[in-house]
Image 1: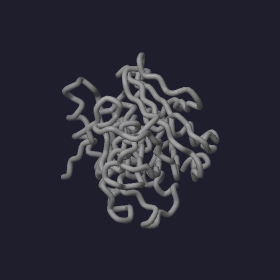
Image 2: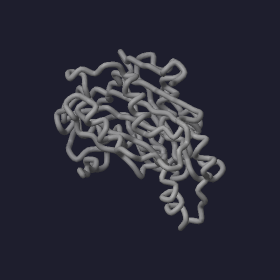
Image 3: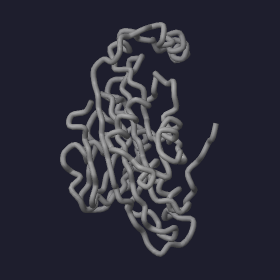
Image 4: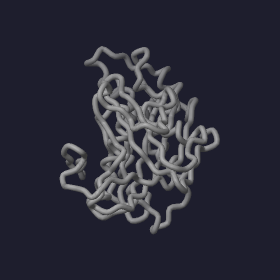
Length: 275
């Protein structure tokens, strides 16, 4: 297994002096969502004993009827749907780096999403996932992907964000990290600045002291902990050119994050209601 970590940065987001800042251009974006039950529930294939044993030390009960009534779509299936929404990606347009972001666990976890995408895309790009970042994982994923591109002389970054809603356990009421439906977003970004240009328009820190820049700020749709802000951009005709600031907050951690993207020439697909 290959493990990777994000490049390190100091105050100001850089380990070196820079001539200026730039923001990535969002070239293509797709959002796919689904709700309701999936395939017929088969206890023999669900590994119920494992789900019971994993929860037992915490006094949590496995709920078969709850799990059986969900879609049980895997993160790989959701990611594939969003990736397909981008349209064909020939080698000259394929990403150099792929970063997967999520906050909800995948209880139908038979295949690694990043590994699947690596072999699904032309050129088998570097692919890894960002975890333990709460609902702000997509902002870390974008930063990590752009840093790899900037420092490695690469250009295209694919960020795939997944909210998997199927749960075999009852969740605390009002949990902001729970997904109300399955949702996935694929973002193909272009970094055409050089290594001496730092990523601009990005911030991550305590909510009380982190403020998005003035201007057009996109806020998340409810019930979609990781994909919500990108769904808001794509689902209401917000992707209309110029630049946009996307901002979200993790109430559980007291953190806020934002990023800025250039939307000029964006090819966006919101799935016309999902699939």
